[in-house]
Length: 459
Ligand code: ARG
Image (tube, rainbow, N blue to C red; front, side, top):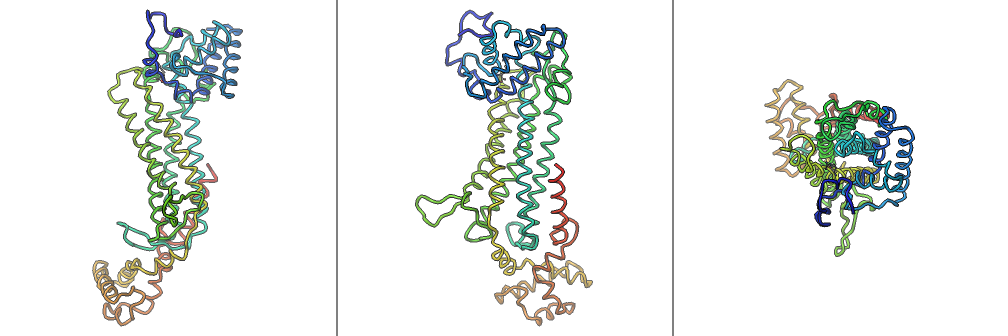
C-alpha cells in the first residue's frame, strides 16, 4: 500500500519493520482529538483564505463522516499508514477525493500530534479531577459518621495517641485536595495550543494560530515553534501528579489492608470489593486495595520512562517521542479505575466502632495526656515525661493500663496528681482536648469537615 509520504522513496519497508515503527495500535485512542484538531485547522485555513470555502466545507463534512464512522467502530486502521494522523488523512482522501489532501496545508504531524495530546490530556485531567472529588466525597461521608469514633493513632506503627477516626480519614481528603490542585494547575500548561507550529519552524502560509487555538478552547498558543512541537513537559507533569495520587491511594490501601486483618479488625471490606481463596474457605482478601497498591508501581514506571525518553533529546521532534503515549494512556486508565474502585470501597466498608473503641482503652496512648497534666501544673515537661514513663513501667509490671492503676501509685509518683486524672486519662477526653487548630479534638474535626464540605461544594 502506498505511503502518504512515499514520494522520495524507491522501495517500501517490509511489513514487520512498518509494524515496529507504527503507533496506530495505541494512538487510535486519539481519534476524536485528531479529528477535532483537523476541523479547527481547516476552519482556520478557510478564514485566512488559504483554502476556498467550498473545499473547507467538503473537508469538514468528510471529517464529520469519519467521526461518525469511528464512533460506530466502522473505521479500519492499518499499520501501513503508521499512526492515527496518516490513517485519518488516508480515510479522508478515500472519502472525499484528492481535495482531502489539502487538509495538511500549513501543518505537520509534529504540531498535529502535540495538539492531540494537549486535547486528550485536557479531557482526561478533568475526568481524573472528577474522580478525585468523588473519592473525597466518600471520605467526607464516612468521616461525618465517625467524628466521635476513636481509633489509635500511630507513629512507627506503635500506638501513639488516640484520634478521631474522622480525623484519620480526612487526612486523606487533604492529600487528595493537593492532588486536585496539582492537576488544576497543570491545566494552565496543558491548555496551550501548539497547532500551526508546523514541523518545527512555523509555516509560510498566512495562518492564524490564535484563531485555531480559540476554536479548540485553548487559552493561549506556544510562542516558540520549536518548543511547541518538542514540549512534553505537560505529560511529565501529568505523570508526576498521577504518581502522587497513586502514592496517596497506596498509603490508604495499606491501612485498609492492615485494618481488615484478624489482628486489627477495625474495618471490614464489603463483599463486592473483596475476594475469596480457592483453597482456604475462611479467607476474605482485600484484593482491590492490594491491587491499587500494586498498580502504583506501573504509574511511577511511566513517569520515569518518559523522563528518561526525553532526557538528551535534541530539538525538535524525534521519533523517540512516540514513546510518550502508551504510558500516558495506561496511567489515565489506571488512575481513573483506581479512584472509582476506591470511592466504592470507602462508601461500602463497615467500620467496627466497638473494636476501635476497645483498642484505645487497651493501650498507653493516653500517657502524653498525663505528662501534659503535670506540665500544666508547673512541672517542666521533660521531668513530667520521666515521671509518667515510670508510671507506665509500673503499669506494665502489674499487667494493667494507666486507667487501672490505683491512686496510690499516682500519689507516689508525684504530689501534683489529683483524682481528676481518671477523667483526664479517658480516651474520649484525651481526643476532645486536642483542640488546637488542625488537631484531632472533635470541635476541630468538625471545623475541618466543614471546610472539606465547602471545598467540595465549590468545585
Ligand atoms: N506517531 C508519531 C508520534 O506519535 C506522530 C508524529 C510523527 N511525526 C514524524 N515526523 N514522524 O510521535
